[in-house]
Image (cartoon, rainbow, N blue to C red; front, side, top):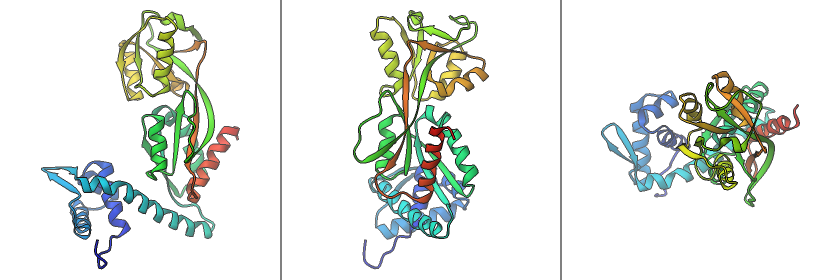
Amino acid sequence: MGAEQHVDVRQLEYFLAVVDHGGFSKGARALFMAQPSLSQAIKALEKDLGSQLFHRVGRRVVLTDAGRALIEPAHQVVRSMEVARASVAAVQGMVRGSVAIAAMPSPAVEPLSSMIGDFRRLHPDVRVVVRDAPVPQAVIESVRTGVTELGLLSAWELPTVSDVRLHPVEEQRFVLVAAPGGPFEPARTLPRESLAGQRLIVGEHGTGLRRLVEEIRASGVEVSIAVESEHRESFLPLVLKGVGVGVLAEAWRTLAEQAGALVFDLDPPASLHLAMVSRQSWLTPAATAFLETARAYRRGL
């Protein structure tokens, strides 16, 4: 980039909107602007950088190598601007702006939804952005690289990391979810050996859900895997359609019972450990306030 060229932070925000939403149309809607204006802004950015960022194939856009290389630096620049804006707001005694949180599917059901509700009641001017991260390492990477300031992960055991901070929140037991009229009579607790011969709906490798299933199989209980899914949202529909029984975290109990499924505690029990993740460096006032909400949730305040 020549000395006479200048890239505006807003241009980078436009670029990330196209990336995050998968196209110019959806990106424009998310930004509440006209698509032609967004396209012109991206073209101006490409001209300033001297590189094409997207291949335009019909109505689709595909990132070029230059576009992929720009994603992380763009996030860092935008985050730095948010820190600057938040610092000014903090001096004025206000918590404003936005806080981005990477979360795995089960913690996003609970406790994240409760924490966001508590946080928004205290700080109605702060927008909360939740980004999907399927496994604990993805949460950590999102925080480490600056894509999000915070993360919420669940794991069989909390990982040992040196470049981000872990803030324990709670433990959640595993539960078994089955269709009414299925293989099990209604009861509070189900011995693990009762799963012998059952078809299971399981999570992907690297998740606590899958770790428990592997432990059950290793104990000599013969079960088969009917479906392996990255999407916990699909577990309940699959269970209710009779495809199999599913192992989920306690966070899903209320939704499962409301949908008409039977929910069982497993004996012996096993639990997931949940923790917030933050950067080692200074956080924006919005992120600091959200961490305080998480601490209050843990204390049961």
